[in-house]
Figure 1 (spheres, rainbow, N blue to C red):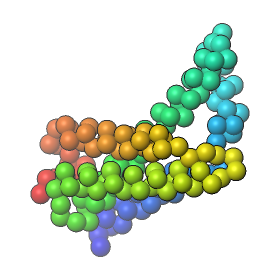
Figure 2: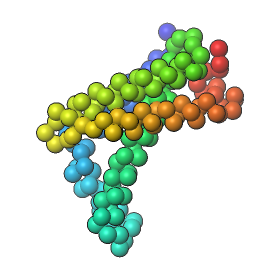
Figure 3: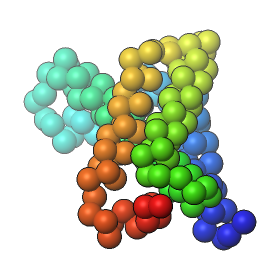
Length: 151
């Protein structure tokens, strides 16, 4: 196995572990509001309590899209470096991998005492991975080289 393949799967595994950790007890709404709320109050002085709540929720849900978009890109790169497959096939598999991790993560949260799993978060996660695949699809050929040239 080449060094590039090992590094690609390593990066994927590390990011998947980060996602899994963020789905744990210490990163629920109550926990993140301890540092996000003061930051939002400082950045947006005069915003109502409801506005601050909406901004906090938007950041949390936006991060779902970001973290699974990155997971999808890392999976895509690792898949394309490891096996000979088309970009389209690798993209579908990468989204499937993101779906599996998202479902497992939300299932973990559903049985947590301080968290709650939500199928809508799984949809956000899959949307993030899918959006990342769409961006790769429209990249110029030269930029697609990051994900190994079409085969």
